[in-house]
Amino acid sequence: MKLLRVGTAGAERPALLDAEGVLRDLTGIVDDIDGALLADAAALGRVRAAAEAGELPALDAAGLRIGPPLGRIGKVVCIGLNYHDHARETGAQPPAEPVVFFKAADTVVGPNDTVLVPRGSVKTDWEVELAVVIGRTARYVADDEDPLAYVAGYAVAHDVSEREFQIERGGTWDKGKNCETFNPLGPWLVTADEVADPQDLSLKLWVNGELKQDGTTAEQIFPVAEVVRYVSQFMVLYPGDVINTGTPAGVALGAPEPKPFLRAGDVVELEIAGLGRQRQEFKDA
Image (tube, rainbow, N blue to C red; front, side):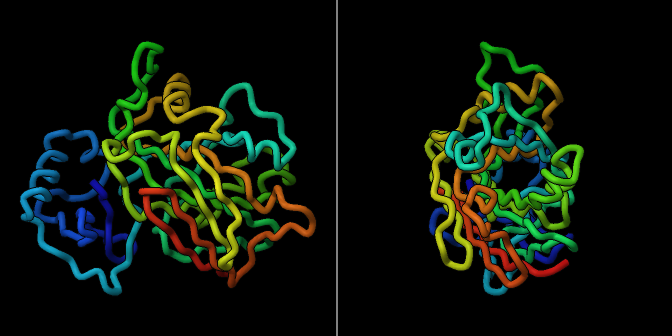
């Protein structure tokens, strides 16, 4: 299923995109698309049954904002330097273990919402990423367990970053990762049953119509299953938590000088095969 949330910011309502591309209203069946729903197999079954029976009313998509496909996100865990080609382009050694950092849940915005270039920024950068959405509580996932059994679904994430704040201002990466609007998510949460292999997805990103990133999740240093297992050793992952799994080569940081960092007026578009497409205009904060 392709689950999404539509409406004005803070007042989104649950919806579903059916196989014919028609937007369907879920408000009569569920309250929201959130961790509580993803952890409730019976509720998801009712959604699926209603969709298959053609019982869901259509919504007029014209002019309707698409919000983040997940409400009440608990935490956003991010994995840095997780693509072989991205590590090569930035001159970094591939990490021996996953690099883990966080984005605050309030950085998450809709897939087509405006993204704000922070005040004082000179190195705002783009990063298309596969987002993993947790559907079952994952605590110390064992070697003999399937970590993907804890995954409810997948989405497109834009891990916008300010590289000067991240790298040159001391401390951890968090200052360059948690600026307002720095995590567009969606358009859909695609349930895990529709993604046959999370290590066989193409990722693309364009800036002002020019293709900048053209990669595949096959290049991940630590694949999705390993990331879920690894992170669960250090923290509990709850339904509705999100993991951003890293970006392929093609970011501004890895380009030759002068590096083409983002400015107000730039337009970024990104997509992952089967998971949908985003478009953001950048404006000054």
